Amino acid sequence: MNRDRLVEIGVQAEVAHPVHQGTYAVDSYGRPIILPGMAGVVANARVGDLVFPWAADHLEPGVSAGNPQRDRYQALQFLSCVGNSVRVLTGPAAGAEGRVTGKHAFVLVDFPQAALDVLAPGDGLLVRAVGQGLRFLDFDDVAARSCSPALVDGMGIEVTPDGRLRVEIAAEIPAFMMGAGLGMSSEWANCDVMFTRREVVERLGFEHARLGDVVAMHDQDHRFGRGYREGMLAFGVVAHGGYGGIPGHGMGVASIFSGPRDRFELVQSPDANLRTCLSLAA
Image 1 (cartoon, rainbow, N blue to C red):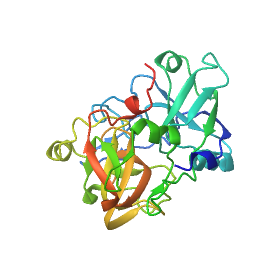
Image 2: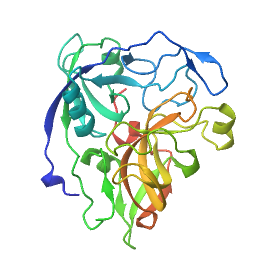
Image 3: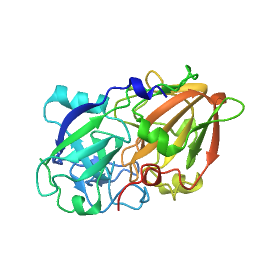
Image 4: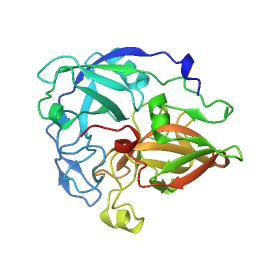
């Protein structure tokens, strides 16, 4: 990596408060639903837990970090990278250290359980943002997006004798399942896998998917935006969970790098999860 060229910059954030418009959503079965999911502090669903058992929609595990000023919010979204360190600045959890584990409507952060138990909306956070601009040397056709050097180190990515990047993954996602988020910037939020129905999850063998899993998305080009392109591969981490209530939505995957399929060697591994890769505290 071009590690020595990357800039580390402090970005201010705060624990976001959940909001609601006072209306029902309608799920893919035609049922009206009001479910929790985005923003706030979720203390009982963390990276490493299963994606689908929760009575939730777009469940953001741990802490959802935002900023009430639009331009600062956008800087937080674009500059933060998976694996960045985050420190609590105010409130009873001040001084606690966490890690960025994904992006969605907010930047998602995992903290130790003791901190999650006392964190509250409005508590100040500082993200040490580093990773945008990362390059894999000698792999100019592979683009990193929201991927920190700490994440690359933790994933144990190696160059194989035949000149490919060896990447351990928990699962492979077919292109026909990709939904909301395609067409968006590679660095912004995530893209959804259209898991709105239990029978689809079970038929494709994803009932044991975990928050924080490293996954490979086939025929996806996420180098300069997100879209379908045959022969390409995109990698990401499972950022949010729960069945997708609204058609076209579902399990959210934040992009971390992408390139031609033949530039990678895929290895299935039960350890391909951020809880292991980033050594997240209990």
